[in-house]
Image 1: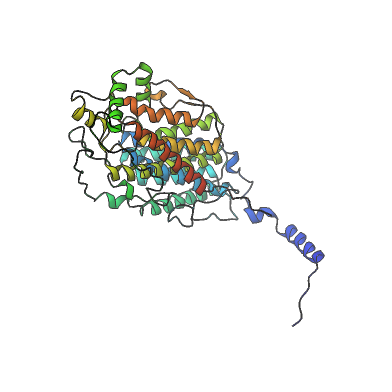
Image 2: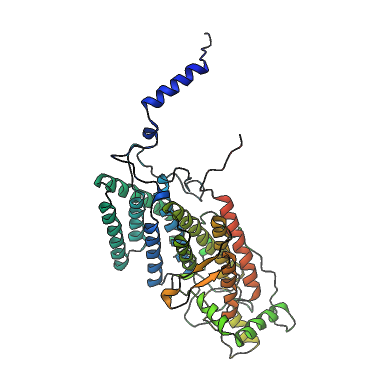
Length: 446
């Protein structure tokens, strides 16, 4: 059979005819009446409001720090994926996160409202993750308020219904994936506290170890929980000239002469469960503050929440996997045994091992992620004004992370090594995630 030859001129004419007959609008999606705005032109209020509700319910329900970080991770991912079709230049997180497969797709010849897809997705997320009556009531109220507002804005009933269906399908997909992350399995595991001079011990009677098996939770982007772990390289010792003793002494002497500024800093970054939305939530609320400060669009806001949420979630998995490997005692325990039995830290010692500092890990990781997204910028953290604390201004995200980390020395609950190694650990987690996850296609060479 002879070869068929087609000239470049014929191909060009054919393409021109195709474009005239099938306009690009049909290829990318045709509106029911008039095109709605892409996510880059929409208000971020829906995303910020839902993340605030997650924070509030974490606080009220006294969800512990690792478990709270997990919820922020899934919430940020839910927002992003629900809005993704309205961000045509962006990638899905499917196949970028461990075990996460293809998401439901929109109908390409139909119109959607991305505020309402996010709204419906988060409603479904909230009522399934926070099943208590008050959480459900708050979620339904917030859902209805945005739905009513978009109807007033002129979004048609067909678009409202279609957008809600897609948002809910997206959230279902994420929750199905979440159900396989080992969280349920770790609820049944029994923890036996270690024994030995260097081993962690309860500092407050009746306060059991928090999430001792959290290192077995499936990470979002890290390949395994201990991927960025920094080995503990300070041998335990009670000798007065040993590094261990001197670091414990530093905690005591620092705590004995705290300045007002140091006390204020320790309290500012305290974020105990039940008092606030936990340390991970503090960084998520810093992110919320950036929405207004940088005038972010809905698209940029869900990008930020998703990447930051993944970061704080993996930070706690990474940190906790290390904590319960070394099971190192807290400064309070060491100081009372070997230096001064009457000594007490400025803030209450948390119920989990010392090394590394969780505040240091999550703060450094969050700072790395936010710097990746926004650069080295000044910002104001006003997230604690609702708790009667004045806003704090920082020259960079790293400065805030450093302050958060060293606040734990002022509080009397971490050794210097736990803080310094925690900062390194967190920087590695943040860098690993921002290097591994691509929300935008990587430019290819010509």
